[in-house]
Picture 1 (tube, rainbow, N blue to C red):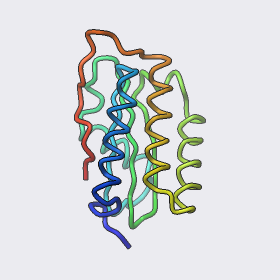
Picture 2: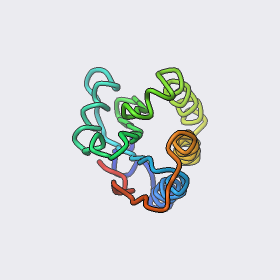
Picture 3: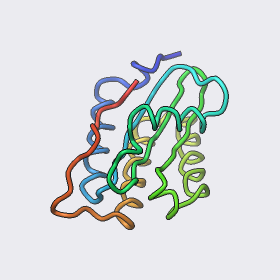
Picture 4: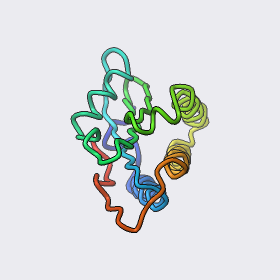
Length: 144
């Protein structure tokens, strides 16, 4: 069983970072990917804690999206800050998670996650289009 740090190889990690950069070109929203080994308890509660620890709630428009994966626990959560959550709601996030799980089972982890990132970016772009003054508020690297 791969650990959080080697769940994706170097090429896949770069693919995911590139997907974040590409997704954020169309929006003022911020997308982060956090991977850890274990999630004790509810993955949504853990994702909320990670969201806060990463200071994602401090973005100007409250439009950050966190994709959370616990590798050993086999748990995934996708959550958005209040600005974007009000627009998309729980149903959208659950649909994204369901699609990720389906493709992970088909052993298409990196490709599925890159698609998920692009989808989140497209949705963010509908409600929070990128302006000329927009600046990247959060790092695009994967956190562990």
